[in-house]
Image (cartoon, rainbow, N blue to C red; front, side, top):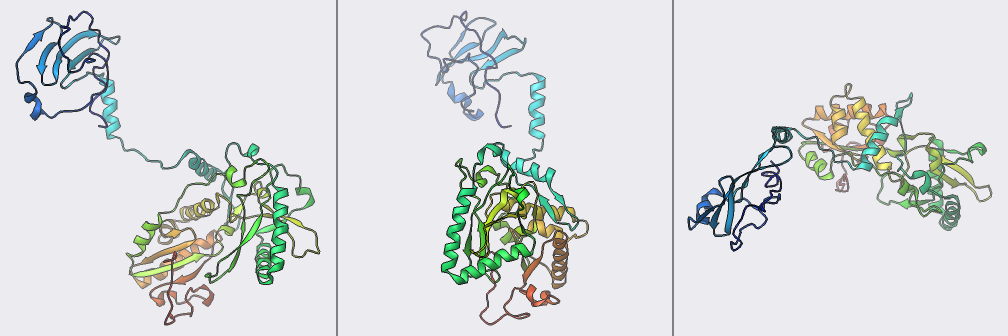
Length: 422
């Protein structure tokens, strides 16, 4: 039990007519008031508390007073009746309160009941509910998600256009000073357009009451083996109300296993297998009702007018993006688990954001796992790449651009393969 007993006595007891001698030092002057117990003393010490046998009998129907090392205590039963006509027993050494049979049974069942622990906060539960009730799949199998909004979303956001336009003009000046960065930035945006991850906004779409304009800037990752420059969209930019889009959206819970758990599990496999998902966020589509919240300014030349574009996929820089992408991987594993008995559990347990870090007990099982993961993720529009293993036989059959080693099927003499930065 989470506590020994209820308050003792169970109810306050009137003692005005008990005629307790006023010169007695009571161990508990408020013994008649219903209160929690202070401590429990072991039975082996009990008799050492009474060096004398002095006792005072008040009346036949009242408790007796017993001398102890703590002072005089009140022990025995009181026939005082409270409103529910339940008798109250009181002993100030080990006080006991009788409770109703219903209360006793309720405490018993609560003790025996298995509790389902929900670690989500109210906001995180709201995200889960939103995802479960609004997410759909298109004919290609790709998932379409809604951005989880806070209750005051509509009044939190003000004008964002002015700040975003000013930031874009500053970005243009920066790119003009760095031709190499400008070329890579333009290539990134062009890829966005070519892949259908953003579209130009037509004149008819301008007057949308629910819009947000995102400033954007480059993030340079020199150690990347694929994209050196990534465009990040600033969802933390303030609107005229002082709130940003990120502050008006819910972040969402962490749905994947903790990093330490994933790494420890990875080390149990004699055959290691790692890879990552290409452009993971951008494989998850955003519902058309929410894409106006992902507008940006862009043009390829200062000789042309500045245009407005909408990002059509989950976007780098927004508060719920990580949740939406990782939650979609989990959903894909649930939806396709019957067809991929090895791959589906691995997706649920061995992914840290877009990095797969797992393995198998044999080369044959590792190859089967690699094939199932590839086919499973393709069902949702995801592509696994940069495959690596400590046994290169596992990589046979892959195209060169799908392998994460510097050479195709052998490690170079000084090559070190990292996963999750380790």
